[in-house]
Image (cartoon, rainbow, N blue to C red; front, side, top):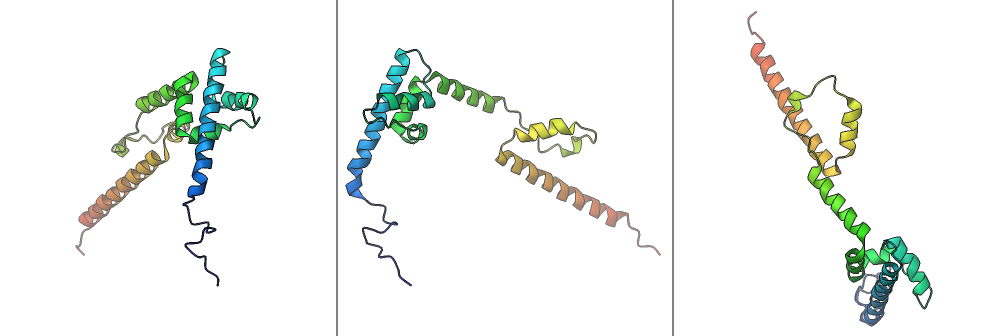
Length: 166
């Protein structure tokens, strides 16, 4: 079996490639410049500053005619900061996200004894679909703890009620 030389420059596990740093820096700067120019163009034409609009305009104003992909803006911190600073739709989305977190009702996990047998299951399913995975996991664990606790109580009561008289 062949092993890869850990110190080899062709080793794919070797992440240090200082000779590419200038290339990466140039690419990051190109992205930032294209974002800035695209945003300026969009603002001058009173068009919304969105990721897709930036990507579309960047192809038109790029001397290489390549443009940039919306994901490139997302992963480049400087480009994303510039986009989010000038985008009204981004700001609105952030406000909605914060309000949604603030207004989200939490389902009580302590009051399982108050659950009604004839409740609306469609509404319950809708509420559960709005919960995050973490909230659902916590709810499930709390439900299992409640079941275990009540099974223990029931079992102890059965032993207490059982008479040993013959």
